[in-house]
Amino acid sequence: MTIPMQAGHGSGAAERASQIPCIDPATREPLGEVRVDTRADVDAAVERARAAQRQWRLTSFEERRHVLRQLLAYTVDHKDEICATIQRDSGKTRENALLGEIWTTCEKFRWMIKNGEKHLRPERVSSGLLLHKKARLEYHPLGVVAAITPWNYPYQNLVNPIIPALMAGNAIVIKPSEWVAWSSARFIEAFRGVLEAAGHSPDLIQAVQGYGATGAALVRADVDMILFIGSVKNGRRVIEGSAERVTPVVMELGGKDAFIVCEDAALEQAVHAALAGCYVNCGQNCVASERILVHQRLYDAFEKRAAEFVGDFRQGNSRDGIVDVGAIITPLQLDIIEKAVARAIAQGARLVTGGKRVLADTGDYFEPTILADVTPDMDIAREEVFGPVMLLMRVRDDAHAVEVANDVSYGLSSSVFSKNRRRARKIAAELQTGMTAINEFGGITYMAQDLTFGGVKESGFGRMNGREGLRSMCNIKAVVDDRFPMNRPNKMYPVTPAQYGTFEGVIEIVYGRGIKQRWRGFLKLLGIRK
Image (cartoon, rainbow, N blue to C red; front, side, top):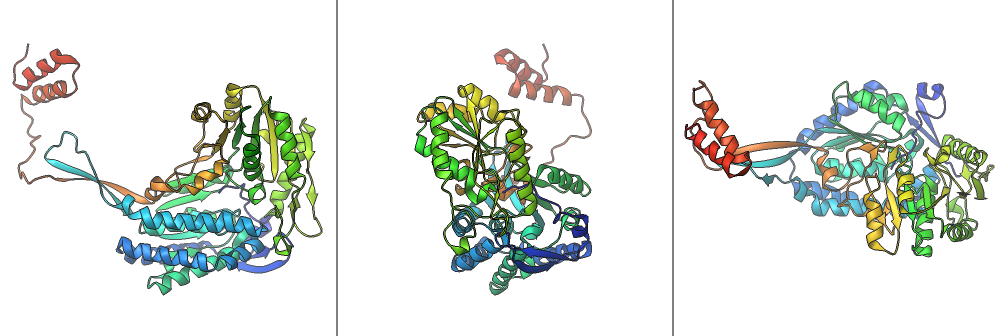
């Protein structure tokens, strides 16, 4: 999931620090410190991973499935402990930790255990005109995968790249966000323990901790592929660094997802999906429904119904009881949200509910907010907010909705609501995004693991999840093999006088237009020219 990743805890001094101070955003309680890894530490971690991968790449698919089953068992058996750790490091609610991190992770394990081998076995393909040959695609491990992950899903963001990396036969070195260094250190230690108990080197999974300099060192290290999840600005830095070694990258960047509600939509269905799309994980979600585009005939009813729910949301530390939304994970993000809302109101947006910091004496919280009458020219309609803010935008018709939806630099996910399925599909087909959900919040696509996850435009390139995401961590090798042994040379040299005419004839026979041209080609093949 993407977020506007900060380089550090707000200052150049943090970048030079030797320790990361870890704090619970819901209470501001200190959690401890995590050591910052240097460039030498990063290189050493990559070297250890490469040594471990030499043996891992020789394992069978069944051995890899066994390890994934053990990691899945750890996740299920320790779900309460994992959720509690997530809560303390991110400030999110217990329910969101369970549904957004444990459930999604378990489903990814289940899918990979069931389907991974199928998508990694050699695949026979047509050999075309080479009738005496066979052709196939082989999927070989790359070696060492690097992953730079954000802070919004501390557990899921770690496991997400680990699963395909291990299944494909790779080792992995992860640089988690410094904002969740405390939980990441504990999770990685647990994963390494599972590997060791299964009889494999724990060095297959490693974390390097630190600020922007540590991430930059990993990007420039001797790795074979980089998965980056974060902001567009930092994504550009990763691409620049990866160019030094020409390292392939998969980029999952920001989003400004459109959520289109037609006038014939089921109001309750659309409102509840919008609530999930805007407020899950307190809006700190890459596939957050940041723009709710409602047909003008349904607009007032939608606003009224959404406000009834949001006005009653409970907010606070979920360790003290049931709440609907939790804290903002970083104080820097809290500043971004506050300034974006204030600027939107100054530009003409109407505040329906929320709009300010709350529980300031306790932790870092921003009220669940609804802004109405937002227009496409406002800053908040074009820039990622990444907070608990619903933006209501009025549209005239389907064409207007598509125009507004596509008129941003992002293209991650989208949603369309209409009782007319044909109409909804037509709208969906015109949206410039990597994912679309019809009559559902767009984030639901993540639970269908056969589907890919990724965007277009400034939302990134390459794909996670599904067959394509798994194969992105492979060297896809094209192989031509003997169908039956001929042991006769295909002679190209020395060039003969008839060679050009022969091949000219073949080309016209196979690719020519109409019977006449093909007949002329046949005559040329026989050495007869007319």
